[in-house]
Image (cartoon, rainbow, N blue to C red; front, side, top):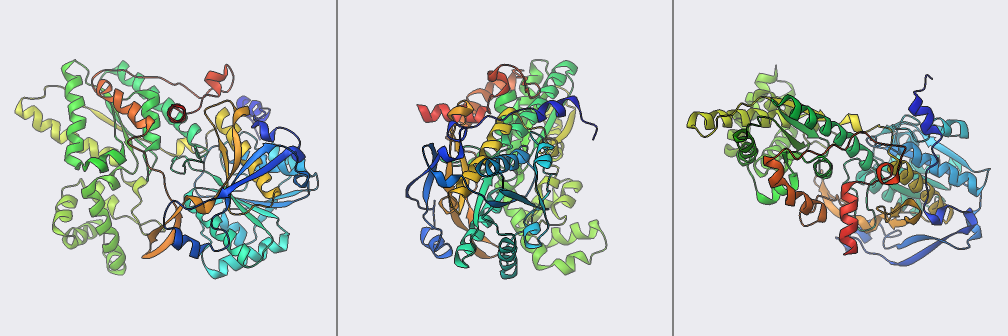
Length: 555
């Protein structure tokens, strides 16, 4: 490989560990607390997880636990979308294993959970691990979105685990992937498969968090990558003084990315999906609020600005939520008839005539491109693929139309020219920040420690993340503790509850306190590129979200 200078330098970086993990394996002690309860639907979850429900919280301390120093065979799976730092999770597991015993082995199942059921694997050695330390991507073993859910798949997973003599399996993924890990842990207990199943919290969307999981890995690097780009555009906008930039950011189910990037960069407008839903705003009202900022800035001679748009916005607009629900049901019920239509024009006409009156009116009033995007192929769950809907362009078209009407009324005299952007895949495989490199390595090392202690059905947890890494607190959270029951495909199923932006939380309050000034002035903030070398307050700084949440907990 032709390595870049930064790639070569990052290989040499030594991730920092919490104090509890920084000594000898036999000096790591696992302390168990009191039994836990799920966040909701406790009786239903006890029925689904009779053998693993209610496990105690686990904490890793300095102490004496000789059993930690033993030979293990572990497997690891990368599940779902990429997130910066995944390779360091694997490196942390590997280094923990080898510290416990040089004879320990780590198998990487290729291409996600399907690699486990299909027994596609590679044994990971030191040379392979060293080639991926502190780098982005999931290309060491690949990822996938296969769900282990049929009896045949569970049986295949058990058979593969037995054939390799696995002592533990680590699933690196988001809420759905770790729900799958919990189900697999329960199945292995039921079938007496001597293999622990553990999870690691991964998603750049930031929606896998709670009182015991302060952040999912990858969120720090992704938001810093996006914030650099937003800052660059803000500087360009202030220089050229002629464009309004509408920037869509990843985050389908929650707006954590948009909120973090807003806190980091101070845009003129940042839409937060959870607030839109709470206020019951229509699409027209959203456009009016954007137009208020455009008009106020135009009155000061500033016909430029920046608007941040979360990827999943339209699913939070009440009228759109109804429309999308009707579309999902309609296309599922008439799938064959719909697919048999000759072209997009016929499909749009079919849908427009079949929708209920209010939804049909909304659908017919949308730009043609958006009409087509709303009826494109569904995801594996049968839902609209919101990342393919150009919400930023929809807002531009509607704002442009509204401004023209205001100009005709004599209440707006500025000029409006807009550019659309979508920052998504640019952040998923970036070189991990020092924070994510350290955090992911610690999560992997913690997963090994939980496995060495014989625990199963846990999510690796590292807390106190706003402090220096030596002060981080490592442990494990029972997966069932984070669950509730939700209806999926018409059936009640256990799922890890997604964490949405809390409108009474410290990060949103900090944003809300500043946005009125941002809407009128150019109070842009330029975070710049991720820094790997220099003072800790620059190189190891966590997200604004973590800093604000930590300060709120200490008050």
